[in-house]
Length: 145
Length: 458
Image (cartoon, rainbow over all chains, first blue to last red; front, top):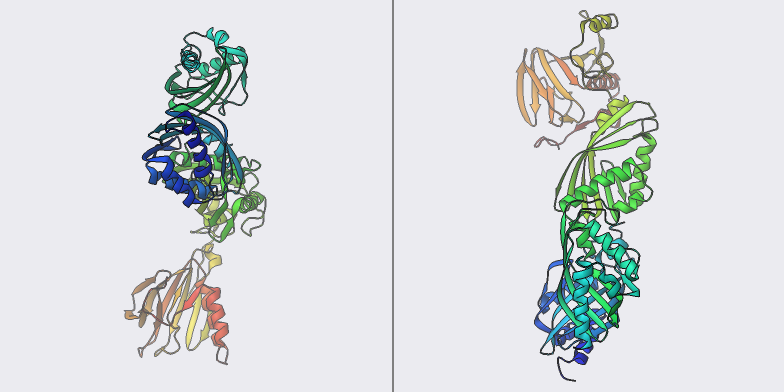
């Protein structure tokens, strides 16, 4: 399967959600990050205004997410791909066991959904734009009513 | 042109003609009759061309200058995904929020499925939190301004309106309430505190006078006013109107109060209830000038205290005579005055170094010389001298000289005169006094004997 093909990109998206975001082991997730992402990879999400820049910063972001939702699992609802781009609609479910967006743990099981766009170059992910329902999530955590 | 390129072009038309409002009739051409549009920001899905007309009307009423711009696009078969940015100004109602005139700039991602040149399924995620925050529909979480707004809503919803569930809404699960003498935890602790206050002051109303915020802390200066119809602070109902001034410092964590540390003028409130005498006499209010008719009418009710030489209750013990001249009952608790004769070589009999926690003490030397030991240092005070001790300053007095001495002891507020009376009564008894009884008297009047005089007591 040649790099930068639709199929290769779709497979990397699949690996990103299972091996990186849904992995129970941070070590395994970090290995996959090293394989899948370019070192200067940028992750953009509205709750982090300047984005998460570089693999190391992304690993710390993931550690925070895993601390907030240790049992959190992402599942792909739908996906599509081009030769340099891909996108996935996803669902998330996890127990709020650690501080998240400044909210102390509530032990609530929350769900979220979003769409991520991926850019690829040289067989690696160079950028992700994530857009999810942070407002709905904070409502579930009791911040808004 | 490939299907993907055709569909991408349709998405660009969709934004230009429908969403940016440049050709509204295009909804009939581009939107399939069974099209479903969903977005977390708005509650119900929008169906078909009619749904889209409603959607566009809703958005352009709220944000007449709404402008979408496609930032990135991709297509795969019948699917098109794009990332867009949008700007606009809040000029009309949106999601039940009044217009604020504020502008916003957010991003979103759309996922569109097209069939035969028409949109059939449109799913959009956008930065709802950013949109509502920027237009001021919801407070920006975590900013000092947001925390100030939270504190004000807390006083309104929890204290003034007593909304059901308000405690859990405003405070964290591990919330800590700290007021002097009280420490309560969690929303249930807050509710308990609310019940205590409302039992005493059922009509209590809080007014926020000022808020100051920095980082995750908010300080609130407030006044509570109510009628004491129930027991409060151990005081039975007085039906008096009382006000309480206080400052609360809240620690806020993402939209919830984590800690409430409040200090208030409880003494002032107890005085208003009449449970504690006011400084300067009884329940009299500190007033402005009294008009002369009122003053004259008062004259008949006022009594001077006149003591002729030898008058006043005298008790003799250890060769010293205590004469009580003015007691608390004569001054509304404000002050007292006692006369003490101190025989020559009155050293071993003198009270050891001590300090007072409740009252200040003043000594005027009438005769002879009294030696005051002030925090370990002797000061000789001959007739005509005056010495005043603040609370907590360690002191004692004695007469090592061969001449008798006499002093006037002023205490404020009153209490020292009763203390002296009880001590002299105990010392009068022939048997040497039991230390435990003496200790009980000291404690009753808030006095503490010290073993060391090296420092001022805290």
